[in-house]
Structures are given as C-alpha cells and as structure tokens.
Amino acid sequence: MSILNTLVRAAQDSPLDIAGLVIFMFCWLGYEPFLRRISKSRGLITKDLSVVRRAWMREMTVREVKLYDSNLMAHAVNSATNFSSANLLLIAAVAGVLFGGHLPLKSLTTLGLDVSSTQLFQIKMALVLICLSRGLLDFIWALRQMNYCAAAMGSLPENMDVDTAAKFTNAITNVLEPAMTSFSQGVRAYYFSLAATAWLWGPIYLALASIGAVALLGWRQSRSQSARGLRQLRELLEEHPYPTPPRPIAAEVQIKEKNTAPHNVQGGY
Image 1 (tube, rainbow, N blue to C red):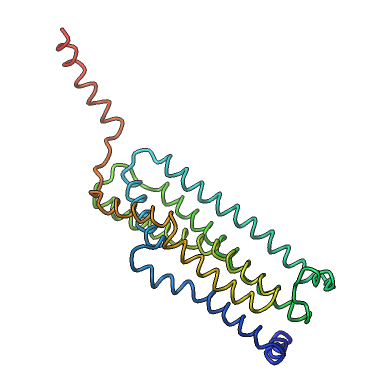
Image 2 (image 1 turned 90 degrees about the horizontal axis):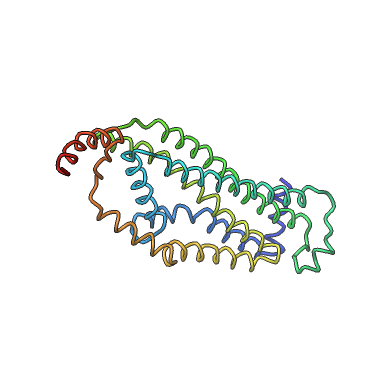
C-alpha cells in the first residue's frame, strides 16, 4: 500500500512522473505483441531467423557428422550463460542500492538525479530491478530450453529417409525456436532497463528513453545491415531445393572404393 500511496502522491505532485511511467509500460509490455504481429510479414530479423533456424535443423537431420551443430549449440549456451551472469551482477548492484539502508541523497543530487522524494526514488530503482529480473528469468529459461535442444539433437537416429527427417526437423525446431526467442527477450531487457534508469533524471527522460529504445530496436530489426543480410539469406534458403539429398555414410563410400579399385588397376595396365 505504501508504494500505491507514493504513486498517488506522485500523480498529485508531479503528473509527469505518472505520464512517463505509463509511456514506459506501454513501450515495454507492448513491444513484444507488436513485434509478433508485424513479424508475420517479411523484412524483420525475428521472422528471417526463424527460417534460418529451420533450415539449420533441416540440414542437421541429414548431416552425417553433427560436430559442427554441437559446437554451434555450445556457443549459444555459453552466450546465454555469460549474459545471465552479467545480469545477476547488475541485479545485485541495484538491489544493494535499493535495500542497502540509508541512501546518500546529497551525493546523488550532484549527479543530476531527481531525489526530491526518497520513496519515489526507491520506486524508480525498483523498476530497474524488475526489468533486470525479467531479463534474468528469460535467460534462465533460454538455457534450460537449449539443454533440451542439445538432448534432442543427440537423440537423432542415423540414415533417416526424407519423410522421417522432415518430422524430426519440425520436432527439434519447436524446441530450438522458443529457446532462441527467450534469449532475445533477455537481451531486449537491457534496452528497457536503460530506459527505466533514465527515470532517475526525470520523467521526460524516461519517456524519451522508452520511445528511443523501441525506435532503436525497430531499426535494428528492419533497417540494419544485419537485417538486410538475413533477408537475403532467407531468400536464398527459400530458393534452395529441399529436401537436400542425404549424404552417403562413410561405410558406403569405402565399399564403393573397394569395388572400383580392381577395375582401376586393370585399366592402368
């Protein structure tokens, strides 16, 4: 109730704080549904990456040696682990400021921070903590799903026909896709954590940073060089003739070489 009372008093004393908070919540909570809606069309990294990942899983099912795929999955797991570790350190730092007892408000004032109300300042720090915590949960869930995907990749049988390979491709893609989506959501939490931090300098900075975070994410999703490259890659993959013919296993190649070796010797004489 004290937080609610603080927000009510803030609405009475400074309506700009409430307006900035509303804009932030709209941008933070509305970006993901908005991205899912517009990703149905082409030209976004989110949609193009889905096609690329499916093509990867489709190739993996017919690849004889899957060492390359396991290295890629290990790289993804290491990236998620590093991000989650950094996120945990940031959470500990913000929580130390928030729950560390007396706040040196005078020293914070010299940095240009708005500390006119101690309770409102604590709410601002709590918002940053919530954003970071949500990102940490996304990273943890991404790690668990990546481990599920690694187990699924290790369970693939050898020498599958085309229909069986297509079924395994769909099954593994349904595990990999949400794992990578959760990882992207965790990274995206950093953007909105920085926007929430801007509230420490005032509500106008919070609103501008929230809109700026959405604009930056949108530009990187659709107009960046990576977006253009992935768009080109998706077009090439869609033109690629699938299913890819299965690779001959090593034993079959050795048998063919042994069968053809005598004929080659006789031809030499």
